[in-house]
Length: 227
Image (cartoon, rainbow, N blue to C red; front, top):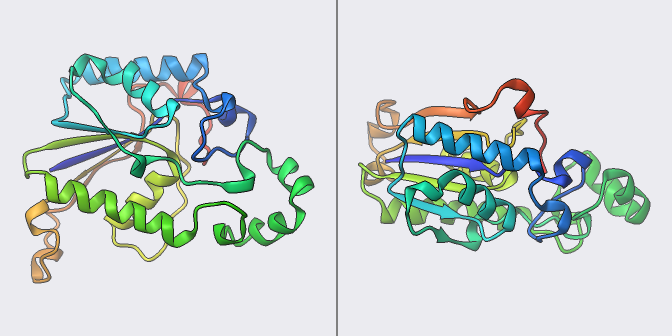
């Protein structure tokens, strides 16, 4: 089974360095550049004859729009699931860091170096984020065959969580992720929970793409960010 994780195109919040999360706001809509990124991704899919077996999409507008622009030509019925929503940022959503420090100084001070979302009012907790990512993986493993290709259109922070679960890492790794970046993994669903020496067989688990954007030039990709 191959799993392709796709981040949405550029949003106004991305270019203004505003924190995005699980809410749909005006600032989290795609920019004209983000629309172009998604269209270029769709062209790359067509040029490379890539077509998934199943498509899963976050219900948030920026992910749905990216999918519509990049994958509509597949003529597949997508599965829209809240499991792929961006991780909730609570009081921080829609704000720049300077605004957060001014409006929520105590939370900002507790969060700045620890990056502990448990201290942010209304935010999705650390355990909730990890549990949701684990559930995403459990669902696709239980509903996929080894020949399936799965595409998921979602968001930077939930992608980071899913990758940590895939790599079975107890840590959450920071990734300087570009808009419409691609992460592709190959794994054998029927052997995933095998505790014999099989788990050390690297032919069963492969990283095929990691934070790649072959459809974009460096100028089109722009700076990476976490929102």
